[in-house]
Length: 80
Image: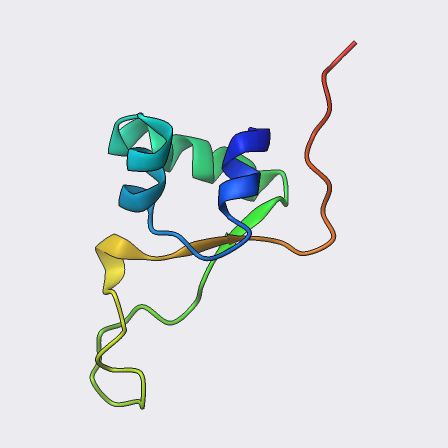
């Protein structure tokens, strides 16, 4: 999990993260969901691909939502 959190200091899509970790996309999505429930990461909100805002050329769409680590949240340590 610490490696995932280190990679998410800058926004990454699940596909980019899966490639960096050598995991399948499905496993990476499950890992992101688990970290989100624990409050370590969040998806970036605008992924509608509506084409209406200034970022319309950068918007990844709903299947490639970028994720980022929540600032100030420390990585989980080993459990005793």
